[in-house]
Image (cartoon, rainbow, N blue to C red; front, side):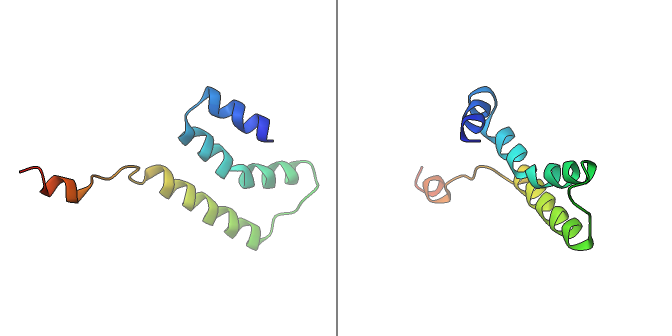
Length: 75
C-alpha cells in the first residue's frame, strides 16, 4: 500500500492523491457489495455521505491564505 501511495504521488499531484485516498471507503463499500461480501445499511450510507462531504469541503476549500500581519507591515 505504501509503495502504491508513493507511486501515485510521483505521478500526480498531492491533491489528487488525497482525494483518491479519501474516497477509498466509498470504493470499498461498493466493491464489497458487488462481490457479495458486504451489505448496505443506513449507518454505512450515512458514513459514506459524511466522508464524501469532508472530501468535497477539502477539495472546494481555500488551500492558501495570505498572512495578514505581513500585509500591514508593507508600508
